[in-house]
Amino acid sequence: MAEKRTEAHHQNAKGLDIQAPDAILSFLAEAQIEAARAVRGAIPAIANAAEIIAGRLAGGGKLAYAAAGSSGLMALADALELPGTFGIARDRIAILIAGGDEAFKTLAGGPEDDTEEASAAVAGAGLSEGDCLIAISASGSTPYAVRALEDARSRGAATVAIANNKDTPLLKLADVAILLETPPELIAGSTRMGAGTAQKIALNMLSTLTAIHLGHVHDGYMVNLTADNIKLRDRAARIVGAISGRGRDDAARLLEKSGGVVKTAILLAAGAASADAAEKILERTGRKLRPALSAIEGSKGPQASVLIKTEPEKGQQGD
View (cartoon, rainbow, N blue to C red):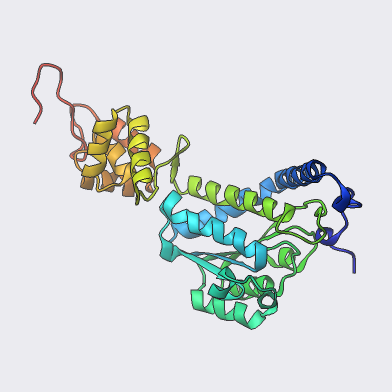
């Protein structure tokens, strides 16, 4: 059996432990940069996967992540950010990590071989047709990740695999295979380093493009964020102001009127008659802000829709 690239010896590793600290850190930094470059070759596969995932989520399905060890931590970081950043409901996301909750304390190696646990996790998540599972494994052969993908696929879920070694079981089994062909690790086999960096970048790209497909991003703003703290409430107001052209106080007032929903506040600023009217426009346009704004702009005029309020001309008193 050919040696896996993730287990190979890096060309700069010999004598690493007797190098000066600055030299060691330079090697480590360069290794991370090399690993990041590997993601470029996976862009077509990532784009394909994002389209599939967006379709499943748009249809009411769930998105699950399955992984072990360091790959599990990369999956966890991506999955936990989705509700706050993009407003994807938490009950639409499942995180299957080898070892379960205990993994967050010890990250023991044994559970990554537990295929029965993987099967139980997939069953517990209730994955079926209409859902999607992303399985991540640097080696591409981690038993937990492979079994999770097999079971998800047998239940009709779409499957995406992310691995750092080519021609591996995980990649061969998936509907979409994302190969991140990172160079050997400076510390042989320590895939929390280069391989993990590439996985994190790929997952960031994948989930962000998915959110863009779903209409959760507009002109680089996260218009579907969940504003559940002071920082995010301030960010939401700034987003409303930037897109609508309103001042900070006016944007905050519109946000309050919208119940804290950024898209609704922006539509109110654009001329929607009420929060309920804005919601109807969003439903009609697939909850995408750009077509919703176009619908409002196109509806203005002498025969404006009841969903749109007309602005009083200068010199006239509004309602």
